[in-house]
Length: 254
Image (cartoon, rainbow, N blue to C red; front, side, top):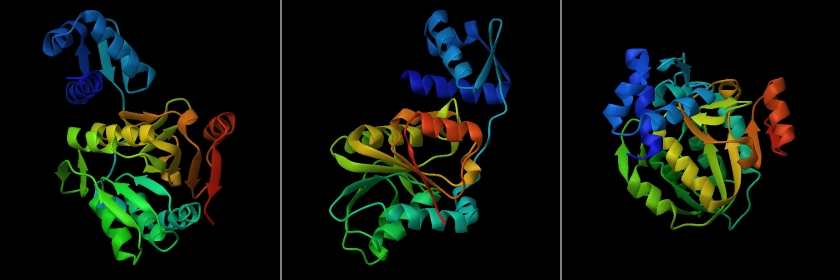
């Protein structure tokens, strides 16, 4: 079990039990107490757990609605974001797109805006590009398929991402916090997102206003990794300050 997986498991235990003990975690994960303390310190710094003497306690995290529900939530803002974002891309670019409701809207808009090479772990994104009448070439990554979100994740997916170099990664995320950066609610989805970021020259984030000032369990990236954010509303003061401080381009869909 790698450190990310171990910390994710600690979060799950905390949400179930309410409290964690260093000694018990060290035995459970077969690591030293100092390793456990470092893990808890990192989770505490991300606002995901609260450290207490001898262990940690859970905090109240935001939760994400089921995928089918999210397809209809804020649908109009997502469509506007998708159209604005699609206009930023040109023919013959290679674009990595992750799984999400907003990226499905984006894929449909991109199909009518540019002829690109699309690399994705989302069955929905792949179909939206193809069904949009686009002549774009689509590479659908392999891996463990999740029926509810129609995406593939896991070690096979992560390995296949490394076979591509892209001009852009286009990602949708679950939460944005001015100090913690960008987060998701699923560890495996966050791992795919980070892998795509590593293989792309530029990063574009698609996020409607409901993602602002939220905290998720899995770190995706910090503001310094982002080139562009496309949203439907100007963010709050602290997030806007982080965007300006890191030179991120902000596009607000009309």
